[in-house]
Structures are given as structure tokens and as C-alpha cells.
Length: 74
Image 1 (tube, rainbow, N blue to C red):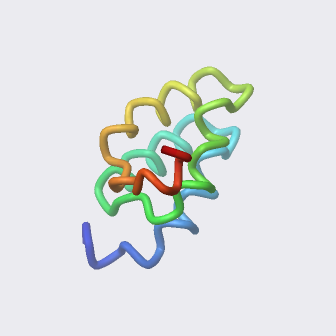
Image 2: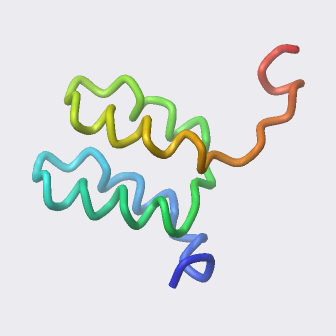
Image 3: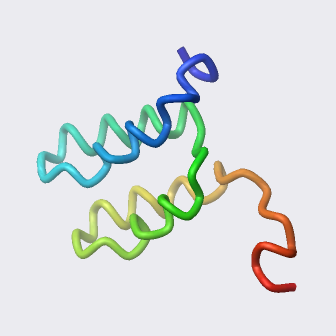
């Protein structure tokens, strides 16, 4: 569904912390396809205590939408 599922991005992101590796793996795959709409909600995935989850999140950094300089204090 790709971009058609974009409104569900935040819900899919919740599945990215599921303890089952199959579930969070598929959730990250789906998130990569539909896009990340909640950058602030995505950030904690990068520091998740589960190293696999943090690593999968790091792989999606290039998929993050462009962040305006004003949002990051430049």
C-alpha cells in the first residue's frame, strides 16, 4: 500500500517495540514503505534498550522527512 497507508504510520510504529522479533521486524519493514510521520515518536526507537530494535530504527534514518532547521535549533 505504500503511501496509501501513511496515515497509519504512528500505529505501525507502536509495533516496532513488540518483543517478538518477527512482529517488530515486519513493522520496521512496513514503516520503511509507508514513511515516518511522527519524527518525535520515532526518536525513542533509536535508543531502545533492545539493540536489534535500535539497529532497525537506525536503518530508517534516511527515510526520515526533512526536518526544518528551526526545529533542531539552528
